[in-house]
Image (tube, rainbow over all chains, first blue to last red):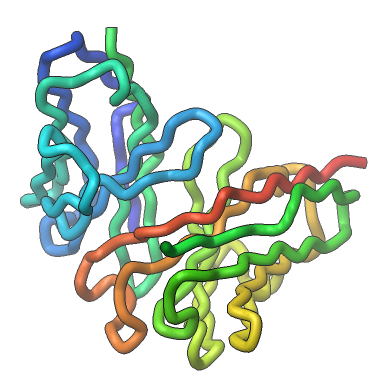
Length: 106
Length: 127
């Protein structure tokens, strides 16, 4: 079965750029999405179709996807961005999630 | 506005079944696939399957095959997920979530993602 791999944790200082990676076999040939989940809340879509932002998601969120790696980049990271982030792709009409990355802003 | 409102928390004994409901509003219910995703305490998101809310067709994750049944009632715009033969490791928050893609598109073909999520239903399996 298809697998997506994320680092368990990423730390960033306020105002700096955070990058969270998601690796999978030829992931760049598929669409990738990213979700943010804060404690006790449902996930929220922050990036779809590799690099598109839904309405209401700040411009500091961006995405890319090439080769075997999709990347979520948060520029000018704010304390409010501290959360768990999950990548997601599809494999033969099934949904695959990465294991999640805890982003700490310190 | 789009809303997915799920049924309340459940406590079940091992071996029992649980049925979680998800009532949709604010959009054409039978125009989008509905996913079910679960999250065990302190763990990540796990996709369980989806239902075509128009045809009733389903696709389940292999690990839940034979234990999960997804249905819908279009007259009341509600989707259901039933999980049987519950075990303690089925303790989790269960989410329904709407596929952003139109039903006529093959799932995942346009990469639009999952745009709306229910509030989650905690299912606790304990003897």
